Length: 169
Image (cartoon, helix red, strand yellow):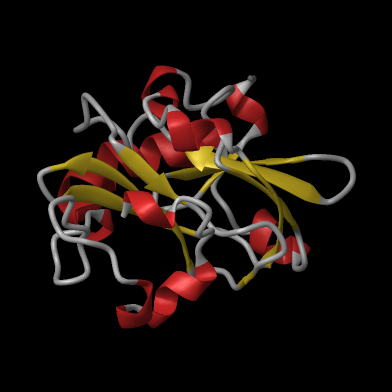
């Protein structure tokens, strides 16, 4: 994928806008730089509506480490990369092609226009990333504990996420 055709959010998410006002969304290499393996991923279900800055999902790297994925756009989830459910490491291996996360409708085109170009993103990474990167990592009370049984009733936010694999949580 031509990285110059992508737009980027400060939360280290890339967006490719297709001609039909649909966006393909994924994580940048910079978002993944501290991870050598990923163990799980949680993404919203198809048909879910997102508002810009909602939590789009989480990736987990074990030992309570993970990354919150923040939605860069408002819109409906049209497709989820189901291959990542069985092979989340694909995101590390190929974040811009096989590691895409979701396809989403774009309800508000100015939100896309407000995202950074590749050059603006590179400047952002050079100037800001080392100072602000802790804000996107899950180091607070809502982090995922791989040893704990997952109880869907305890977490109202989980209605938002695809629950096909509930027995794994």
